[in-house]
Amino acid sequence: MNENKENNAVPLRTRLKTLRAAQNPLDTNRGGLLIRGRLYTWLATNVSRLREEGRPEPHSIAAFWSMPEEPQLLPLLRQWVEEDGYQVSLPVVTAPDTPLEFHVWNPDAPMREGAYGIQEPVSGPADPPDIVLVPTLGYTREGDRVGYGGGYYDRTLAALRASGHPFVTIGIAWATGDLSNTDYVPQPHDVRLDGILTDKGWAVPAPQL
Image (tube, rainbow, N blue to C red; front, side):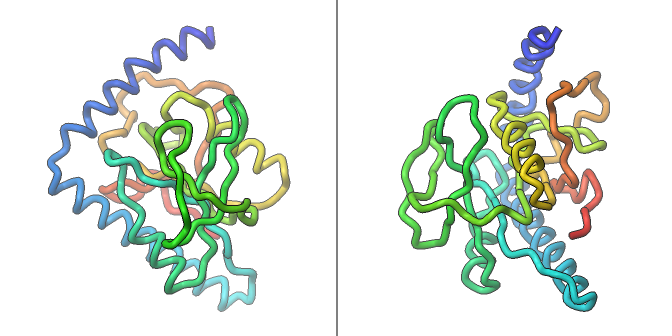
């Protein structure tokens, strides 16, 4: 049964990649800018509220190195590090079928090409993340996520939750990944996200810190 679901997910991922590739480059650039702006505003608003309430503020943000087809986060990550003083980390693949590790990133950090051709920082492990930004290919309005098929984020988020450290997850997606009008059914091991942000706005409402 699970094998059939995985097989069915292959054409779904292909279709989702085709939809995002068909976007107008101008819309892609504008969409990335809107996503970065909404993310910045979301975090700043939450931090202001936490300060007023005298509660601890987030310190560590686990992000990802955007592939060319994904919303570009790098300008925002730079701003968070250089202007706001957050610790930003990026995922590192250490072995197949294991959770990701998050290693500290800054604009001057040395990088290397990882197992899937994605840039990874050459640094030590970061602090446990307070916020995790998750690359999302497809999604439902309930927070279910379709990734790229490796299962890395499902294992990673499950391991983080088992550790007991509180954190918030936000999927970063294109609106073309909306699965609302499809027969997509998530698998039992899929980990739901707390919020999902697209170029058209919050597809799953913005969570509170």
